[in-house]
Length: 77
Picture 1 (cartoon, one colour):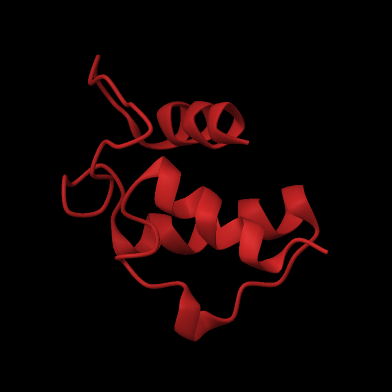
Picture 2 (spheres, rainbow, N blue to C red):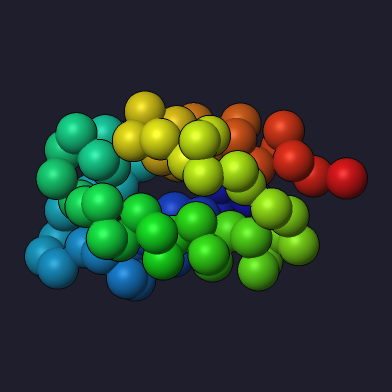
C-alpha cells in the first residue's frame, strides 16, 4: 500500500526530482495542496473501495505516506 500511494503522489504532484519517502511531509512540505488532497482522497477511495469521511480527511492525516496508510487501513473492510 505504501508503494502504491507513494508512486501516485510522485506521479501526480512532484514536479522536480524531490525525493519522497514514507515519512516525507506532503502537506506541510508543500508537495500536496488542499485541492490535490481532494483528488488524492478520491484516488484512495476508488483504489481501496472505501469511503473516508470528510472530517477525517485532514491535512494532518494526509501529511505523509505512512499517515495516509493508517487512515486507509481504518476504513478497509
